Length: 566
Image (cartoon, rainbow, N blue to C red; front, side, top):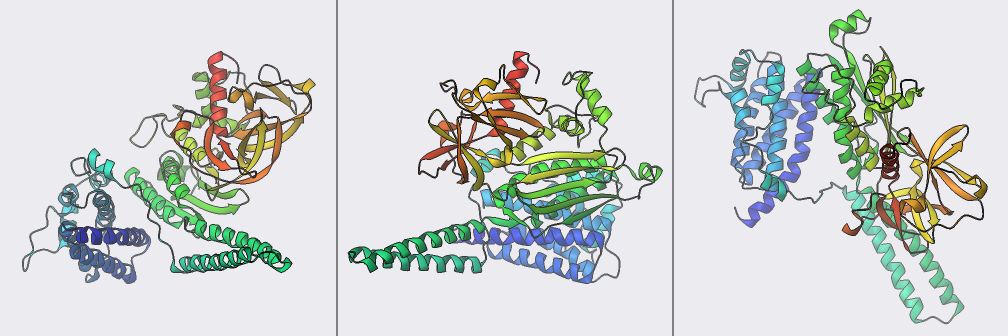
């Protein structure tokens, strides 16, 4: 394949991503209502992918899509309703094409071919000849063979033999591709043009300085340049923003696939499609949200018979909502299932010796116990859940994007997960603090309260009393093993909170609030558990952004290993 061909393949793979998203969306709509418009739209997409893949030399992919297109065309010309098996084939074909595109992005010359899928859905399909059965008929004939839903779903996924090798996986490019509207590009070009004009004015004024008028011109031009520079940053920043609607579609698909395999009837309600968030955060949120909705399907929503016994509607409901809030955005995932058993969670926690039998714990903190690694109240281990693996990863991933997660539940009525995350990882609202002549940056989202403490009330034995509550305490200097002088004046204490756990952190001074532009650090900081990134401070010097979640986790681990009560 020539270099020109490879370039054309790259353009095709960028285009096909969007077409496959539309393919999946249409299939999900067809599950609710079969319309001529939906079938025609799917036919156009299939024809587009088939023709484009052939034009760039991807003949195997083109032939594959052609076989699937035959089924769609047959459905267009048929007076019969769209069968469940045909719809599942269309969804499974989507999964195969997504996997195929991933392989081609890594290695365009790959011999990848979804043979298992073809055997599953087209094994009974005769070779093309006049008078022989259509692809749709072949699919229906194959559907007559008894097979469990889970088997169909499993067989629709790429098999090990057809998946890209570890070597190919390693070759995958980490470069992100963003789709940006020409309107945003034009706005950026106009701003750069304005900045260029101001630079010319400033250059001319500097070359002819000496008069009061020229001095005023320099001052005015500098102010305008600062304003334009900020607008350029804001415009460029919007390039990374993307609507959350795309992730909703993937969650809807995950819920529908799993509910079918478990034999449950579940409706999905979503809102907030148009709200935008930085693509980096959105990509990281897919796995934790998928895990949460899978738990809702498996653990939350009861089987039809039990729902009827409980006086509920036969069909369960999972709602996914996104709303803008002051801290960024709030994502809620709720179900109308059986809810969490506070009693069962406490029993399991006592059994694992996580809490004392006589301990009195607020309900919020009881639910937070499910985020402890290895903690599970599932009575049986299944392919979906019950192994005590997952919710701790969910929490850790959310914390990585400076987010928070909380749980609300009512036994017999349902459960709600509330996730708060910033809209961007590039800018963080923070407090700049000082310890031993060094400045540090703490994200405001983790700071619950700031109080002033006198030297005579300095905490002892890593404990701090606030409002009749004992809160663990550490001085920030101890985190970095800095030499600390005994305080002579009142000093600030920051009460931080992450997922129900509080930690009071003492500092020498608070220097002010700051919007920190986050920068990645080089590998020399990889071993520092307390640092999540770097920034430039208001005085122009570099500063470290602290990882509050990691500090709290390390502190409580220390208390546990030292035998102290947390």
